[in-house]
Image (cartoon, rainbow, N blue to C red; front, side, top):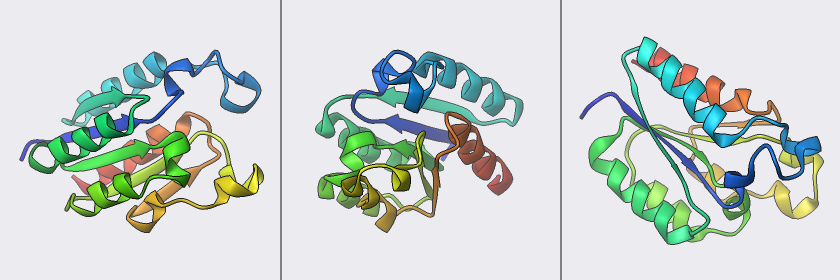
Amino acid sequence: MSNVIYVLNGPNLNLLGKRQPEIYGYETLADVQLKLETKAAQSGLTIEFFQSNHEGAIIDKIHEARDKANGIIINPAAFTHTSVAILDALNAFESPVVEVHISNVHKRESFRHHSYVSLRADGVIAGLGTFGYVAALDYFINLS
């Protein structure tokens, strides 16, 4: 297996920087991707970056990662609170998983306090803005 980390992003994150910037900030998903790819390259890692508004597409990427990745960083967005299917796919992935949320979901609506993904995640980062992705990548860099 190569030194690949999959970074998977759920629904509406394609609007990052435009949608509710008071919660999510002004940085775009492309900005996050560039930052992670640069940092990963300096550490001998490769990033496979993906975003979809479709649950099945995210599940397909998790399945693909089983044979190609050393880890997954996932921001499942709204699927966090609803998707047993994503949890099941992650349970079939044998390497580390870090769950990332840009906002502090525990300071928001009560339905956001439950995460199916957390049942599988080795770590959860919430409320650090897009820096949470960098912190998750640092975790994988320290593992390698």
